[in-house]
Each structure stands twice: as C-alpha cells, then as structure tokens.
Length: 260
Image (cartoon, rainbow, N blue to C red; front, side):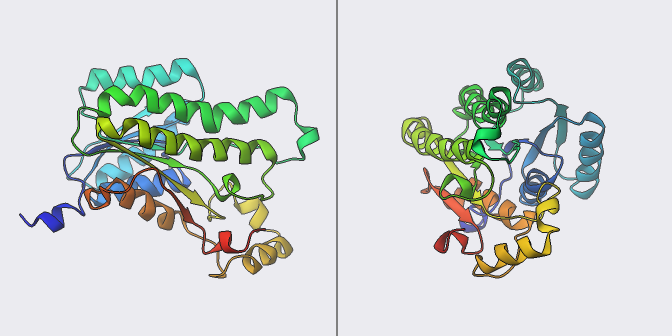
C-alpha cells in the first residue's frame, strides 16, 4: 500500500471525543470516521448521544462507533469513562478534549462557584482526561491529543475573563505535555477557533450589529463552520502531521491578525 496514502488515513486508530454529540465535537467525530478511525463518543445527554451514535454507525458502516454518557467535568464520571474503555479492551490512540462551557459576564459579576465551574469544565477536565489517557496512548505507535482551545486564550475577546484564562491555560498545557510526553510517542496539539456557527454561538450572532462587528474583524468576512475546525483537528491526528507537536493552530478566518 502507498505509504503517503497511509499517512492521510486513520485506519487502526480509536479516537475518544468529549462533547461529541454537537457542534465541533460532532463534526470532529464525522471527520475522523471518514478517515477510518473508530469512535468512542462521550457527552452528557444520553438520549441525544445515542441518536448520534446510531447516525454515525449508519453513515460509516466500516468503523466501530461506541458511546458513553458522562459529564467529564466531574471526577467520578471521568473515571467511569476510562473504566468503560478498559472493559472494552479498546486500544485508544487519539484523545480530543472538546467538552467545555461558559457564562460570559463582567469579571466583577461572577460568583466563586460560577468561575470555578468554568475552570472545571474547560481546564481541569481536559487536564485529567489527558492524565487518564496517558497509559493507553503510550501503547500506540502514533498517538495524538488535540485540545480545543480558543482565540480567547490568545487575545481579549468578549467571552468573560474566566473563559479566556482557562483557554490560555489549556494552550500552555498543550505545550507542556508536548515536551513532556514526546518521549512516550504522544503528540499534543490544540486548535484555537474564533466564532464558529454552533448552537452556543447562535444567540450572539443573531444580533445583526454584533455580527457586523465580528465580520469586520475577520479578514475572511464570514463565520467559520464546525467542519472547518474538525478538518484542522483531524489533520493534527494524522500520521502526515507526525513532526507537529506543541502547536496551537488558529482556525479563525485571520481574526488574530486584527484582534477584537
């Protein structure tokens, strides 16, 4: 078989994707499946997640699609995810940390419980998912982690300071793990999206004046699609990206060249 073709495929890989039932996580699941990866889908809504599992199984009959309902911001539920994987005996080789959340507001308006929740959802969950995945990933010759960060972790945007703090820390976690775990054969990268057309972004983008502001600061003059982030995530998982680690790839239509 052509080795260059193999470099752009993910047959023989199994990907664990958090927040997999909607938005970027769902698009990433579809993209990885199209490249031949088996899927382990995790999200909070059991019924909706099962619908997604059935849909992907029908659309990609050549791969295995399994699902487990869990809130990975909760320690016990993270452990349950990895107990499930251990019971499956599945050789995990890819981890996509996509689950997260936010409550945008001025810094002085956050209660302690609100900002701590954002840290649990966006940072501590990914940190622990990486640590729990490590013994699995070391068993594969071409393992990869991709963390879903944000341009808010690079520059100020109107997401609220806790969200920006968590994404900046997630980017730094990416760099640290890339250096620390390279010896274990694990590449670690991140993507940093700007506005992407998802259920979470719809309320903000429904404001025509605000949408105009966003487009004015985006050189490509449009909102991104989940599939465009998913393509970047998938690339970072491919053997073709085997010399890329510790990078934060902006998927932003050129936004970071301007700022907001």
